[in-house]
Image 1 (cartoon, rainbow, N blue to C red):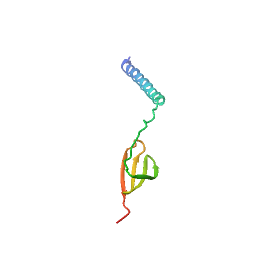
Image 2: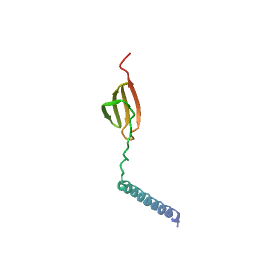
Image 3: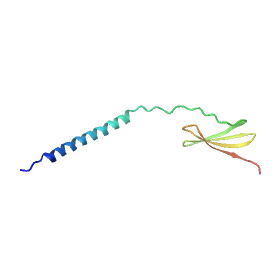
Image 4: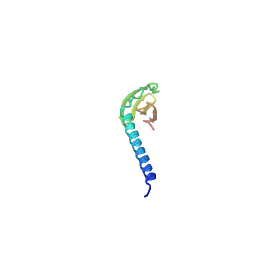
Length: 96
């Protein structure tokens, strides 16, 4: 008469591992759904543009385009809307 103790132990151990993995999966989903989502902290960014005034602003996704005009000419400033960081500045010259 063959002994089925070895395969029976393997089946039981694998069954327990599957149940534990399924429980961990369900627990992870519950924790993710019930986690409190704190909004991003507000930021205050100072845009250095002495003597210039804002002519227009435009929002495109996570980018803000600010058009400035002043004594030194026009300038375009690109800001990151999420962090408030200045990504780039473009000076616009209107002369030769």
